[in-house]
Picture (cartoon, rainbow over the protein chains, first blue to last red):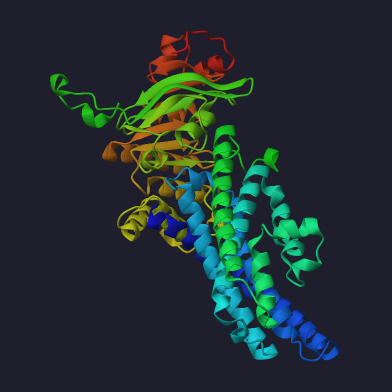
Length: 267
Length: 262
């Protein structure tokens, strides 16, 4: 892997953000709105629910973690879509750039943009709604890592889908987090789901994170092995998504899709 | 052939290895044959025109040499490197400009050159960018977004990007389309000078036969995916009973000419 080529992919995104407030504002505006909305909902629920249970770490914390995953995914996919929107594939892939270098550049972009979103959310949730991350203890770090890896895997898979199906299919990509949200139990325990949905949940790394987070908040027992499973699954999905992207790219090169990607016929 | 070698005594002249070697290249899409087993080479310093009517297979050939389209059969060697086996190495000494591949309009001229300079791992990048901005008259547009440049300025930017890594192989797909005659003449002179100075091979597609006659040392005529003719653009029309290159082009396009494929 050549560092300068990876840097080129990330630098292109930096230039885009530097020159465009309309790209910068959504990095923190939407998550700030989400945290504000769910912060007040959590505060209200604290006044009507059984005394002693605090919805701030359980509900607002879950929303924060879920938004982090979604922002990581969007960090990858938006960076990829910039090349779709500017019809830049021919210039990029006629260069000596390797697919692994391209994807790594997208991931680096996502690290930066998702950290900005995370910082905004943490600041707002703790200052305005009193969310303390001490409530999660040291588990917060692996929780964030698993969600980060899951978001990267979703972003790569979504980008591969757009590469395969054409520019118009970006509208299939945006709702991907919403598609898995019911299964991972962001707002409720997985145990409330029907059995077939629970079976599916066990395959999704974020489900272990949200179950673990709720257990910690309730001071209930929690399996460290669940964390290991979720980490293993995340790594598996990253590898699978990367292989999927590589396979789609190879198909696009073989069929001529890449060379004529921006043509109307692919839309 | 490159003028630089003309001064060498014939007995001292050793033909250099070709920069581009295309062998039995073929591309099919289900039942459609886009490129039908073509072979050609381009020597260092040589500018070769790839001519043919629309749909002849020129851009398909260029895309295969650029590594963005996989051949169904055949091989492509760039500076001794097999493109299909070592894509990244082969493309590091290649570059291109095409009328249909404008650089991202939302980056400035300098930003575009810096990003692509990093992609091609150009040494002393800032100095190289300054040289190219000067060479293509883009200094005053350094901070201007590419998307707001005129088509002629965008073409100059594409060419500046194409020369960033001083490529051994330069592919130009209609590089002077949509620009005025004065700018086109300057660009032709720049490309010729570049090919001579760097001993770079250039594959040039164009529908402007006067341009091809002026610039190219050799031309390849394609029709229906096959190479029909090859030769000196100044001598070829006479050899095939045409008044000039444009008439020869029209004859090939109408398939009034039926020579054996080269």
